[in-house]
Image (tube, rainbow, N blue to C red; front, side, top):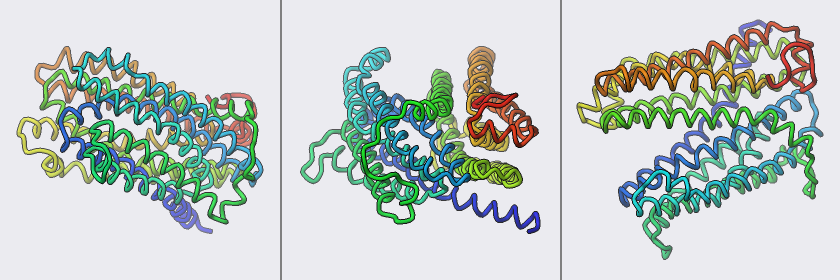
Length: 469
């Protein structure tokens, strides 16, 4: 087989995995859009309550997601090695861990009144936010179970269940929102709380749908354990936690940094905050294909590592890096000439427009760098190296971005437009540093002897870099 043909086949295999992930992420983003539109048409107070509540439960969700993603790494390597019994044995332990996490994040979301009190909201917004959060809390255990099942299939390279369940959950959320927010079809009119209950029901529906799909497909039988009680195995659960906790904490801290940056920009006025939100939405849309390609690459690299095939593993790394960088470059070329057209979809306000154009140009320029950071980080996870990317993120965002944003944006800048751009430039500086650190780590990892590297990636100790960081 020629080298070009090998790259082409690997790229096709990654695309097969990546596109269902992208569809699922679009569905999840669409759920937030539907919530915003329907709540906004109901009342501004309910929309504000949902926005506040969303920013409280989202970090809990991302923490759970990151931890459960370790399951996809373990399954991918066992799949590549042909260890079907290991794959079957892992699923019950992932579900036990999901139940544990759901039992933690659900109550944390439910009992958030002290946190809302610290925000000093008016009494109506306070109560509506609490009602929304307490409704969503009942769905968070379902999201943990959903992620356990999703990561099991993702590790196998089977993404159809994830995509179908996400899309069906999104579609179900629309009539549920309509009925429970506005009180239609004989159901009570609950406003923000109704949106929370619709979200919780959709979460459980998605979990049940992915479970039903997995159980109904004969092709999945050999990857599933028998339907019987399996006791928790502390050693396997610790293995998932050891690998996944740095990923979950990375997601949690990253969203926290973005929230703090938003609060900094909010002090500069409504136009600056609106421009920031537009730029952030544009970046978020571009970020989805990057994450989808990174996830696909991690799965393919994991399969190759598990099989012990050095050439195949390096081919997957090279192809995944090239595809992710290509997505970033295409996004940059699309964004640079058309910021005005994008902003026009959101607003015609001149004050917002002038700031947003500058921000979208910054977004376009750093997307390629961000694509490098995504590709290298996901590749390191495939090698079970999760603690170094976490440390790199902490240094880049918390040691560099936040102090630099505060100094340049709030102390040095003389206008809201300059301050907002300076804060975004600080964020880009942090991402550039993170990209350099994880790329260096990946370069160093790939230079090591394959026998040593494969032992580490299989979870066995070896000289040099310890497993997990």
